Length: 454
Image 1 (cartoon, helix red, strand yellow):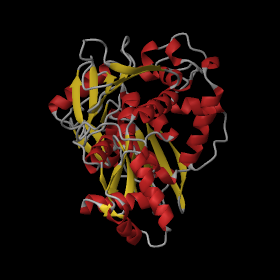
Image 2 (cartoon, helix red, strand yellow):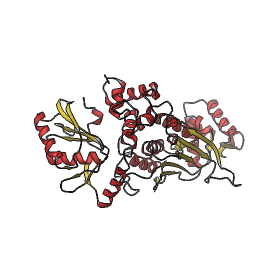
Image 3 (cartoon, one colour):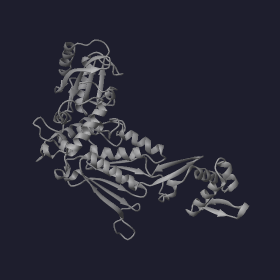
Image 4 (cartoon, helix red, strand yellow):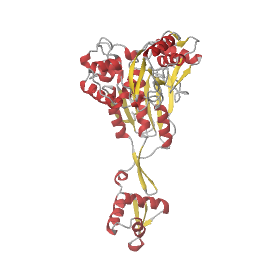
């Protein structure tokens, strides 16, 4: 299996070793098995290049010794793989339904590119999560291979090949088995139905999403009646849910024009990247075992709330959510990563916070309960919807508004100085346009005319 250049940097699901190190191998086997699984590349440096000459028998001997240090033994498969400028060996570890430790009692988890020991409380939380089983990998009751949508599978295959930078030369079903969408008998799994079925909600009604847009800050209006102006139930495979929800949110997000100096910049009500991360995280990490409740996206005038059924998984808490990573649905997460909806594994929350702060908003607020997790994105302040003229204003008019903001008013002569290469008639029409749209107020007459903000 060729090693994708996009996956060769050590991180949440990838480790590299120039030579087989028994102690480090054992630690990494346990850490990957307890977390989201991963790949260990032996004979490869951190740059993804083959480094040194490694033989299969020494890798096999090191693996045998490493597994003896794992309690219980970690299951894996390994094979020779192509790396840049040479050959290497890839050890593939799936997430384990069991809790693994080393012979010395340490329970390790993968955090970024490190193997971190868990505390006593964290071990208990992780054990409780693993005791509930691996729902996404279970066979979907009543589902058949024919329930899958060929168009969605084809779309995923194309994205997978783009991400891997290599062509898949075997059958589609072999790829579906590899990613966990089909089990060994060819039966669709829960993960497979959620990602690829024509109508996943026929099998799991709770797998859809509800979008609601409210006029104000509250669920109800002044008279006690429902305060929402738009409600939409969104279903389909998970990728389609993400796509459609993003379209709906985009339709409802206000867009404003900000003039800085002589530059005009359009800004959305919330940073695009932050909203996208919150939405994808909700779809990827919700507890699909819980029936009766869908993901909810609520837009108020001052905030957006995205609620995902199921509390935080494993040892993840609101306090460590930025630094730690543990997926309830690692196969769904991996598929959405290959699809392109997740840019880099384990960095979504950090990106969300940075984008909100960079845009001048408060950082997201996280609320965790046993049965739901909510991300709230706040506006800096309530703002009236931006008028449509801000979307069509030309650069000359933007310069005029910037000048007025700095000096309080502008005359025709001053506008001509700002735009010396433009005819007087064109500049006059610019001013007429802004006056007619209610942006500027014309004061005086003839040579004494000037314009101010209305």
